[in-house]
Image (spheres, one colour):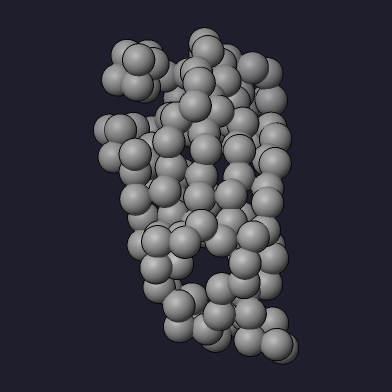
Amino acid sequence: MHAYPIRVYYEDTDMAGIVYHANYLKYIERARSDWVRQQGLDQNAMRDEGIVFVVRRIEADYLAAARFDDMLEVRTVVRSMTGVRLVMGQEVLRRGEVIFRAEVTAVCTTLAGQPTRLPEALRHKVH
């Protein structure tokens, strides 16, 4: 499991002072990027080689509202992996309580959008 801390800033909130729904997607994206980095992959180098990660599907549940200045934690786990697809479970927690949950399917593609295999280093490290 990978854990990534997030603080809610004023810019993240709506007029009611709660986190705007789309910002949870930003939070989990940051956590996934940090997870990839911790796996030893350089996404800039991957792009230079013509390979990028693309989110194909997100299923999300909003369970409770986060507010300005809350400290959150995004937890990420790998659910499954095939040659081109990576499915991750992600949760956003506040003081140990899950307030947002998502299942994210990401695939590797070429810069032209054609499916391609996940980097070998990632396939070997995760399995």
